[in-house]
Image 1 (cartoon, rainbow, N blue to C red):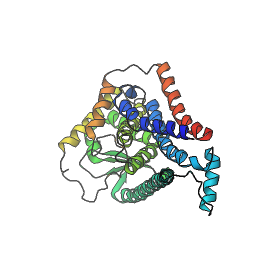
Image 2: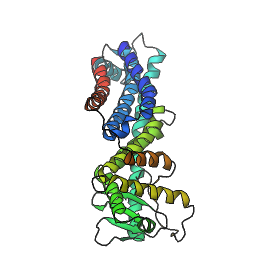
Image 3: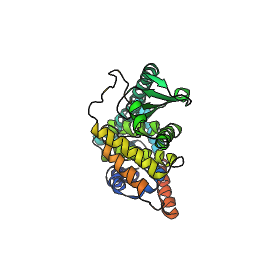
Image 4: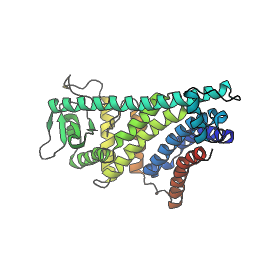
Length: 324
């Protein structure tokens, strides 16, 4: 039990700082954003399980020779039995930490999704009131806004892709097709769920390197995945031009002339084809560079190795907990 707790603690420490820092600095994720996204999800999940598992396993040491037996004996103690004689204050502290961390993460995840769902419904309602459908294009709504804006609002049958008049003015037909394909890729691939999960992780543990770097990296990866879908519809340079035009218009627009004061803004957690508030350049520059400069695909061997590492990260903490 003690050895398993130590190994889990080491895994948690590696996944808390060195691993996410190295992955965030790597240049291969832009060549295989889907594979990189799987790895980020594995790091986040395995890191959380390892943290909680290490505390739980150490705290159960006095209660039994396995996690299962220790949990049963702990239940008897909670029901009124006396503590084992070798129980230390640190064991109780570890068990409390495991319980508090688990509840904190679950409550934060729940509150993040509930809040996002509430905002999404309110936003859909506003879009229905303040926008007009684009003729002949079901699911597309146009808002009267001078700034170039394009974003998607998930909602099953009510999903909508929102465009602004400013966007329609600066893009030609092929560029607009690329933007629409990009936004629909976000809806089809459920990127909002991935973004919300990492947003929850960051808000729960804002001081954790993995949480901060993961949310930033994942936000870029979902944009690259949507770009890859749009590349099937339009030429790479057409899409790159559309992204650059929207980005340059955003940087030059401080207060959009003619914009309606009550025009809805993109909801938190949404994805846009243009710069997102807070970090526009961080996403635009690598996206445009990737489209205009040909990059070789990730080697199949490396792709398989990354996926194998991702699977190992998910399996190892679980095996240690069952074997403890």
